[in-house]
Length: 323
Image: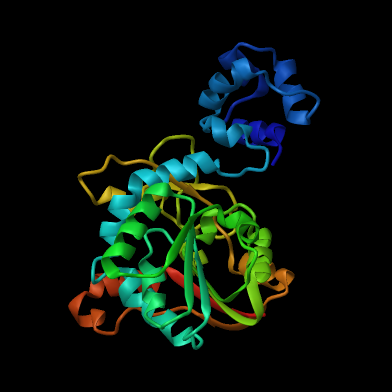
């Protein structure tokens, strides 16, 4: 979305006329009109007051491709690394109780094979995959702090896993080799170019290789609150807007429910089921199976509220792909 389209969109969303917006930031209404039609661009001197008046972050306003600034993403995950590790490593986490059992059912024989885990974070799944005796296991992530935890755990576990600092959207540029198995867990909704991502997966996957990509279920990401600048969302903003492609902003549970960390917004995208399927097909990869894992049956008795909540808005959608 071009900056003029963004100005028009957020101005109308705020209920402002061109004249009212012009008055708020000290320019002429003709200037607003030129910006919105693409005949001109705002000067840097008015970017901050313009973003305040429109209720959108400066990053969101200036990013012509509507992307999420990588430095912002990196800073967010660096600051949340310890909280993330603690939250997701609890024995009853969704990662262990729902996601991993389903992933195990989809795994090919990994013994003696090469494995790549992109968006590996603190290595939770990297180390689980290593238990299947691959010849080589590599994790790649954007966050230095996440990887510091992963490397520390690797030493404790006497693991041979390698960890690389890098951007998943440029996955193929980091490797001169291809892998027998490519894996990722809940990374895709942070990436702006879904088509490009799956093309990269195709490039790093060996002929005859398998990929298992676990994503945040589109029904779940559809309820993430729409981004409104740097304002924290209210509880009633968590409502499903499935076909709304605007960016989302929310507080991650590992931050919100940890008193040792200050609340901060996490920004991501929302992709529909069709977005995922079309991106995979465009990449040339073949869909072997699609899973929507259920919560443990035992939760119906031991934790019915948790069970029922998951049934209503499932967290995971898992693709098994081949080349």
